[in-house]
Length: 84
Image 1 (cartoon, rainbow, N blue to C red):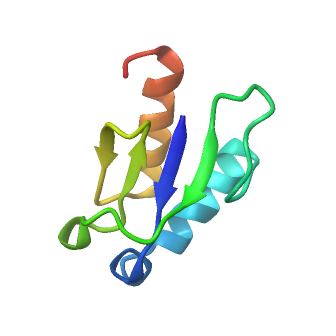
Image 2 (image 1 turned 30 degrees about the horizontal axis):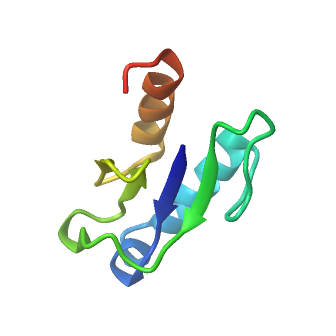
């Protein structure tokens, strides 16, 4: 899984808190991969979701927006269960 985040709209809407939460939850930072190889965090310039920022993309096909730490936890829990 590759997580992609960040641009000015995202930053203004709190992407730093989202990235901090991902770092804590996954125990990795941007450019790093979890020990099991399942998750990689990547910061990108834009996902074209300015009105729904902050946003991230998983595996080039699933988009998540209006993110909060709670939504991140729910998304990761679903991914770990295999729901998506």
